[in-house]
Image (cartoon, rainbow, N blue to C red):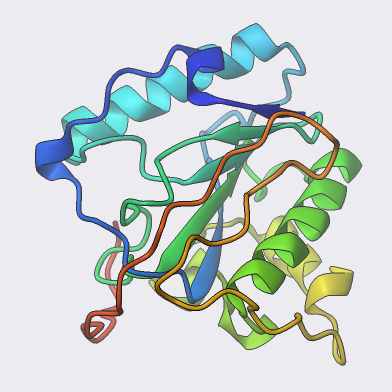
Length: 212
C-alpha cells in the first residue's frame, strides 16, 4: 500500500527552504537508525514516527520538509515523504537529482523485514526504469558520506536485490527530460503519486564526504 502525506498528517512544507528538482538520476538508500530500532506494524505508530522525523529535520537541520522522498515501513508499505519535485535533504552536498528512500529501523541491530526488502526491490526497479537509472547509480548512504547508514545488515542485503544484481539493467527512460515522468505507484496496487514535470538539468556540485 502507498500512503500519501495526508495519511500521516504531515506538517506543511516550508517552500522557502526547498529547491526545485531538475531530474532524478541516482537513488540513495537509508535507514532511520534510532537507537532502539523500529518494529511496529501499526500504521498509527508509523505515522507518529514520520511526524517526529519531519519535525526533527525541520527544526534541527533547518530543512523545509522531511528529508526523504519515500519511507518503507516494516510491513512493506510505502509512505510519501518530500515531493519528488523538490531536492531531498538526505546526503549533504549530494542531494541534487538524488531520490531518497528510507527504511524504518536500525539495521545495525535488527534485520530489515522480508516485506521491506520485497517492496524495496520492486519499488527500486520501478524507479530505475522510470528514470533510466542503472544499478551503478543506486547507493547506500555510506557510499556517499562517512556514516553507518543504512546499517550493516541492510547494506549487505542491497547486493542481493535482484534489481541490483549483475546483469540486471533498467529499461531506458522513454519519457523526454522536459515532459512529465511516469507516475510513481506502489508495488501493490494502491493510490498513486504523479511525478512532476522536470526541468533541464543544472550542473551538480562535487560530492563532499560529510554527515548530513
